[in-house]
Length: 298
Image 1: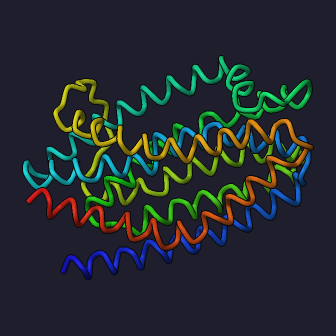
Image 2: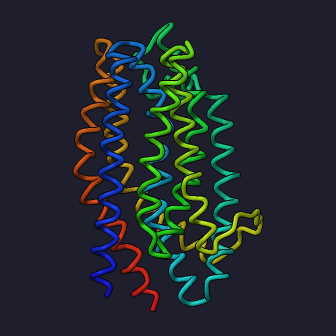
């Protein structure tokens, strides 16, 4: 039964991820067409990389690894209602903490941009700061989306969370085209489209999240043994992901001193590398984690 669950879940996840990757390529083709490979496109991709780097560290990958085992344990040992309370507390914590990070990032955007792209000067630097401030809120939406994904994985729902990325790409494509046709600058249009896509990535999971018995709510009592367990599980995952993100961070710093377009080329190269990893490696890892966590809790 466990083998069938993992195989079926991995198949659904891979199918949805495959669709998302295709749509992602369409999105990137449009971005390449409208932005090209220039100093301006470098500014956009650095601005996008800042919340995206934090997303990789604190949201999607690391959060699922921490949330799924602990939430599964809470549900198996103490019942669905206890799991719902833990989800409410984590939702509140993310809303407050990530929201605060986004607000602080708005104020300290020039310092952050200077740290990740020290080679940017003048208009390119100012443009990167502007686009960063537009896209920082993207981090909040994808963090909440990652929570919903983990909660749904606990209930053996894999297709809907995997499709959330497809909704991100569809929304980004549609909003990008609409804004450009309306005469908005391609750089601003792309930044706004990314934020709208992040919101849709979160919102697309909400109906299934509610259908599976979860509820949104504010729970300010953060003292909870399960939340502490999540934090302990999250730290080693963060350390592992930090190595990869440090590599990207250093590459961006170096590329910021290179000719215009270098950061753009690096972005597209990374997108090609992520295709097989996302479709096959991540699919098996995500779907097996929920089943293995359930067996461990029993």
